[in-house]
Image (tube, rainbow, N blue to C red; front, side, top):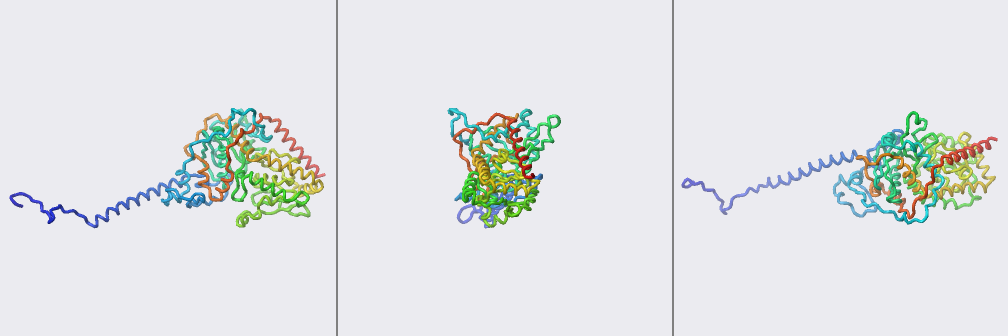
Amino acid sequence: MKGGVNVKKRNLTGRTPTFSSPVLICLVPLALFSLIIVSLIILHIKVEGIVSRTKTVAGHNLDPTPWHPFPPLNLKQSIIDDDDDESRPWWGLFPQVATSPILHCSYLLTCPTIIPSPSFNSSSSSSSPPSCLPLFQWIHQDLYPWSLSRISFSTLMQARKHAAFRVVISSGRLYVDFYYACVQSRSMFTIWGLLQLLRRYPGMIPDVDLMFDCMDKPIIRSDDFSPSTTWPPPPLFRYCTTKDHLDIPFPDWSFWGWPEVNIAPWDEEFRSIKLGSQELNWKKKSRTAYWKGNPDVQSPIRTKLLSCNNSKTWGAQIMRQDWAKEARAGFKQSKLANQCNYRYKIYAEGYAWSVSIKYIIACGSLSLIIHPQYKDFLSRGLMPRKNYWPISPTNLCPSIKFAVDWGNEHPLEAEAIGKGGQDFMQNLNMERVYEYMYHLIVEYSKLQDFKPTPPSSAQEMCEDSILCFADQKQRHFLKRSSASPSSSLPCTLPAPDHHLIERWIQEEEKIIGDQEKLETT
């Protein structure tokens, strides 16, 4: 201090000193790194929470249906391997995102906003489309319980406890609310089929809200409902029904392919089967009845069928199909087109109805159908002695033997019935399947007295989101079954004719009854 004045001490350079400590230099990046780590941990926890709550078309976070338990799906959170994509998206740089197909496919993928227009001009058509196949008459019969009462929102929600998922179509877009897992890839291929329907008839599918169960056995018993007690019944879509149930039959998932057993989409599989059926003419085909399938599905009739495995005594060859073993061998022994070298092919129900019925009839052999309890949408159009030969379930082996002996004694008639079945299946190509789906949904939508609105828990589904969740083999099958917009209007659905349905049922019962009498005399 000089003269009472405080003079700052300066360094030799005349500059104010700075504190550039090495410790401080290290602390700043360390703090930033810690902040990033904490943020990533928080992000990880939040992402894990989202992933663990999101239900998907592949079955993530879904329990098997309680009314038909099956082993839970083995789903791994692995990096999405799309062999059609040469480059990874930017979120692949973040491991938690890249390893979660749930996050990728449910939240980072957006569905197209543009809905394509029809490829035809309905107003310029000079004539009405041709009439639908006769079996379409069953659409009116299936929906008859709601024709007077209509379907309220509360009636729809009564079906929720029996459904695996809920489908809402709104303004041409499809939303799904998942409740339970479906066995194998049934839900994936069923929803894909609905998306192909929207693609087939763009802008023509009405807003609709429906409940769907993807398991085998129908559950809405007609005896549990009547106008004087409980009415209307809950509307529930599924793959089959019976005369004692009110479940609404819908084309099953395998029309778009069944990758687990290597069965191609329907049009492709039918062409292959028909070609295989032509390798041998009728005279050269084996003179025995043939069945190959899985008897271990809680099916009394298939268990009973095993006792008929004697070509000399019963004229039948019964083969056990081990699908797990077949998958390991590359499905070399299960190709359906190679099973048409028999004059007679047997259809036996499994746990309920079986998708195998359409492949058996497609062979053009004389189909020996063991009188079924369950029927899908197409089998109700079949007529005994015209499209197939009825087999008695109570007199099984002798009934098979009778059919084989009759066919070998009347080869021309047997071949004609077999061809009648094959022709029926050829007429039921995917164009007809989409027409059936279209009219069923249109007629169903007319019965709803509320505006279909997707719930907040529903996810929008589109082709990209389905393909995103699919594994490599599933994607291969899905893409092979992709539809193109129709160049014409769907067929014309005839007016309801319940008397016609009654005549069909009576005719079928009479033919089967006469057949059983003939076998026992």
